[in-house]
Image 1 (tube, one colour):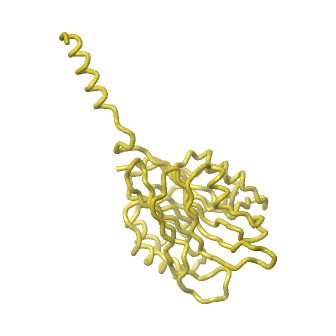
Image 2 (tube, helix red, strand yellow; image 1 turned 90 degrees about the vertical axis):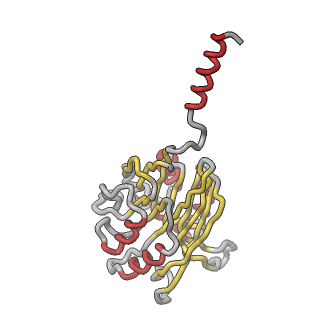
Image 3 (cartoon, rainbow, N blue to C red; image 1 turned 45 degrees about the vertical axis):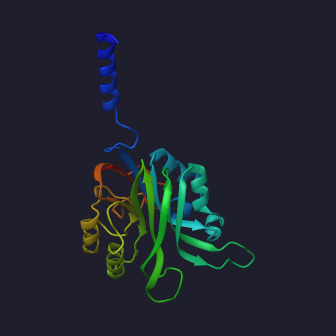
Length: 264
């Protein structure tokens, strides 16, 4: 091999070595948190196609959804919303019910309502953790119920823990305070998408934010048609790159939150 060929080969090898491999550190990850309000918009219309559009338009790779119906009731046409959204977006699914009820008379499907994970990446392991809840469908007193979702994703060959939650909506912070304490026993490094039902200055959220900082707190998410408060967040132990609230005033009663974080 002559000197010129050796020189060209050396340059080629240096260039190849400098090109990042798939899954190299520092890749960006797009995460969406969206309370879909069972597919019902601020105009009172049930339209899961609109919900699908918000997800696909965001180009999010990992999505945390709240208020998802699975054969729940007539309000959502008894549809399997989690399965339908996974099918329409082509994403992997983990559905974590808060409530799991017997079928209504004349129907065969169990009625379920909760949160969901959609992911472009494989879902390797899942857990549906219980936290304190004051039920919105039973007259039972406060107690533990599931619906705090955890999914281990394989992102570019590495494990990423992704959590989805929906905290209590009542003005009294007592239930949220208990929920945050219970979540902290489970949470580790990773990403959380949640409707936390409290503003960024709420004292009950401070321990949660200390564990997983918000990617951003500017901007309001509720009510969607005239937002005046922030209830929805993406929290992450990964470095934030950008966070924005897509202009979606009709699709749900909440606006989504789209965050970009940097993989380690």
